[in-house]
Structure formats: structure tokens, C-alpha cells
Amino acid sequence: MKTKKESANPVVRNKYTPQFKEQALERADKDGIPKVAQDLGIAESMLYSWRSIRRQIGQPFEEQKLQQAELSRLKRENARLEEEVTFLKKAAAYFAKMPK
Image (tube, rainbow, N blue to C red; front, side):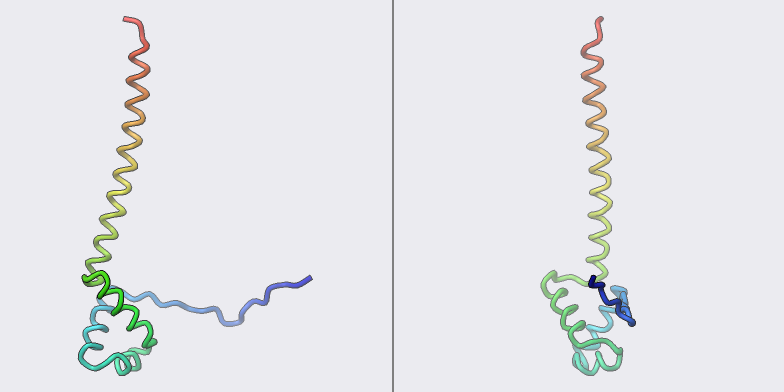
């Protein structure tokens, strides 16, 4: 029976704030990505990826984060309203069947 080998060193992923990403990209624009990546101790590919995302979307990471939060809030609100509509339809059908 074969078993999966467990890695002795699990990969640790760092999460960076939108402000950190913006500041790192601003520095990279001035000093170059290789130097900034070395100074910050992060992979150059990460900076290139952040830069690519920023160019595709055309807005800073902070604004993206705010838009995602607003979208999540609107989705929750929409689900709540759909539940209310379903309830009201059932109530209307119930009262429509009642004799006068």
C-alpha cells in the first residue's frame, strides 16, 4: 500500500496588504523590479504579477479591495431580498386562497 509523502517543510504564503503592493510597485517603477524584489525579500515574479494585474484592471489594489467588499455586500443584500420576495409570494398565495 502506497502512502503520500508528507513534506517536512510546508509552504508558507505571505499575504501582502494593498498598500504594501502599491508602495512596492511605486518603488519598482523608480528603481526597477529586480532591485526592489531583492530589497523586500520577495520574488521578482510576484512584482511582475502585481504590475500585470494593476495594468489589466487599471486601478490600484486598494480600490479593487473596496469594490470586492461592496460586491460581496450587494450579493448578500440581493440574496436577502430574494428570500423576502419568495416569502411574500407564498403569503400572497395563502391569503388569496382564504374564503372571504
